[in-house]
Image (cartoon, rainbow, N blue to C red; front, side, top):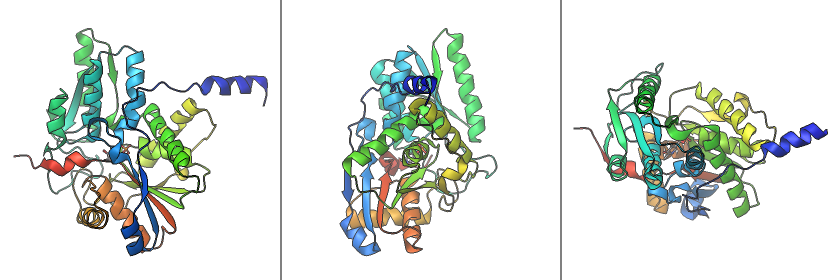
Length: 338
Ligand SMILES: *Cc1c(COP(=O)(O)O)cnc(C)c1O
């Protein structure tokens, strides 16, 4: 490597700053009854127990996203999501702690433009919204439409607060920026520190992308095969994963140039669409609850675990298997909009 190359690597590896919101490391443990029943050596990584603001995967992203917002002296964070968003719940708590105003463009059931609005059980009230109210989230509920339309709504909120002279930061749905994904790159390191012996397969839910992209960047060229189970009917998401991972490489500086082909992204398990529970997901929730006493959620982890069970049944996933639990507990308390 020439001197210039060495210097650019050195500059790039300045670690992003972090506010320690999450209780880390999260537990890693075996699932003995499910392992015996399924005929694989099944383990779980408990990111439902990140602790912060009710737990879940968005906490790992917020450790870095909030540090960045505070360094930039942001006064208002504008974001977007569904009214039952786990991310908006954790984001609004972090904002409350640091005196940042948190405003969100929300829809009860935002959907992918191509797939259209799914039909199914409505979980838009209660649940996360109870916590959002405690955390002072300024949630603006818009009529249902596409994720792109909701982003336009969020842009309107940016203008509203900029017009008041505020320093505004806009974060995308799910906090899925390269810096958010950095939280999951670090989570990969955390797992490796807990257990040197690699898993054959690691399975996680995937939606806005930073979890799958960050872990994918970590596991690139690794002995473990990472599989992301999509909770959205959007094949194009795999391009977003590659884009987030390219941005993450700018931060980490390992020179891992990932493309869409580097991601094992499974589209078979989202049911009717984003935000609507599926029968298979509900059955998978019931299975893990009965065998191990662990609660999953109907929108993300239930569907992802249904994918894991199906892939184990088909022997696509064998040997030492890790399910990465990403949280979502408050959605179990959500109710239909009345
Ligand atoms: C947001 C979320 C996911 C998906 O993570 P992304 O980084 O958005 O892909 C999975 N599980 C739960 C419980 C979530 O809230």
